[in-house]
Image (cartoon, rainbow, N blue to C red):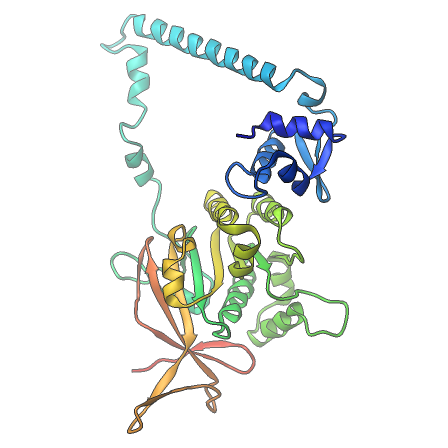
Length: 371
């Protein structure tokens, strides 16, 4: 098994730096996944031992491992420090237990009383079910456990919006971004299937979203202030680094990834799972657009680590007397009809009925009430 010191030795033997692929081939380990070259490099980066320089990874020139003791020596030192710490803690415990009791209790007993007997009980007093309002149709889908509307997306929820191509998933995702940013929420919008801005005459996504914002009577200046966009040309470890950096530094409330299909084909399940857990660690809602059938969305490995699955698909009507189904689209005064439904949510209750919505020719989404 390749260890951190093996990667450090490899870098030293190659003038202190190398690409991820060179390290992977040189040490005979995969580029991504558990015990991969990227996983080890990322661990060394968190210890300030290596850094990224473009497409290459390099030992930090003044890092402790460059001029200091070897990795084995440092590990021995760390073990010695740990042994000393445990010895001191043991002595302190003995001293406290031997202290004369005050009011019938020793100091160690009083300290123990301040520690909850069950961690779960402590957390229950801190956490309540809450929702983050987006002013989109998603706010009406989630319920408290007593059946009352939650009034938003469950806090810190990681949810998939799945459906076939052309169902309107990206339109819904962009509307979540626009309305949430207009409410003052910090939004991270990772666009993988479209182009955010271009210098040429192409009608880029930024221009389209600005027009939609004006149609929704939203202030584009406020949206631009709260909207953080990632639009990478290549999906690699640099993209995931930038994603996590945004979570760390920008106080992101909602992170939208459109779509995960390209992510899965480029960097695999492990990195996507890391992004989900990074969202949870920061209390960030994750919205993952996924091109798939309902069955595939539910049975996918990715579905096992998220909290909610929402499905969106074209609507159809049955023509009376003919016994056939006809897709309904382009109806005068209505627009393109779609069905939206929460398939599962482990955080709260939800309305499992299909919601009929209309997507107008201007891209705006409206709910159609049928009594």
